[in-house]
Image (cartoon, rainbow, N blue to C red):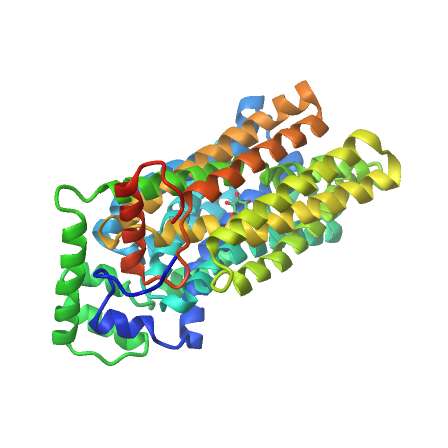
Length: 484
Ligand code: BGC
């Protein structure tokens, strides 16, 4: 993909923003917008560690809902956040979101009965979805283009740290007070999610609103103020001039409707990328890992011992996930989205087959080793090429006027796919056995490679306003044309 400036290339203050150095404030802002990503990881993974100790008598349906309900809630939360963020801004939604996370975590901790807990988990699900819809869009709208990928990969990194911290929190609490597993322990573990949420709530009130969103909404004085926070002194007149150009670019693309053929194509590409991100099985080791691996690792006999053994094994995978994501961060702007994604899916296909072979053919310690090694490289491949790339393209491929709604629709697809696979896995597992289900994941990863090869264009180093034009051109050429 060439990066020669096109008609859509931003001028004026946006061009200056694009060539800014990425100061520590930019990194701080990226981390702040991704605290929701941390909680996304924490809250989706934590339930697996505490589920067996929640002392309420719940039917299978409601027990399932405690785990998978967060994913369904997230699909709804993402859809709701889209139009709201396009109307009220990115910052306002990120603040509301942190508040919902905090209330959800506190309510889970003090829940007097199962229904309050179910309500609290639903709230958390909504927050996870809303946050996953907005966070990368917010970053895309202030990030200088040469480092946009790295800044946006923060979301994935924070998700992985959140998953890992949830395991560590569970291990520490269960080890310190094993006798209180069904008493205070699970409440503390769920309630800890309130700490980052409250911090985010306090700090997000002082973050700048997205300059691109402000411009599009004709709030020129506020835009100049936002630029000031981003380290650029600009006058209101300069903002007005660039805003006119930005609006013209978006108007040209969207003569009849904002949902142009290029936007629709981008929706298709990101939506499918997310479907593959989920159906290739990444969350099986994360959500079911403590149970699946606990049986291989179990050292003691009590329920708490089994839980601790499973969480310990899952923590190893959590550490691998965090470390591997560093390589995504390091290479996303150099190697690019396409090559990383293709490499990621190739690795996933190979290493899930290795784990599958171990499950089918080995026993005892050799099985533990082969499965853990297979899972570790499977997760690393995902972390380097697939996880962050999905959330990144979701934030960068749409024009500003529809970015909130379009990114939110894609996030919702991701959560629906997540729900389907997490819900179906136990059935698939008991019908075909783990080894065969893993082979199925490998086949799906091969299909994902073909999909990325054919449909995902390279967008590294391309200015934000030019990215959608890449999809417009593809859509004009042919709905099934190659990647360009
Ligand atoms: C996915 C999550 C997954 C996580 C693992 C994210 O990109 O969307 O479903 O749990 O990566 O690191």
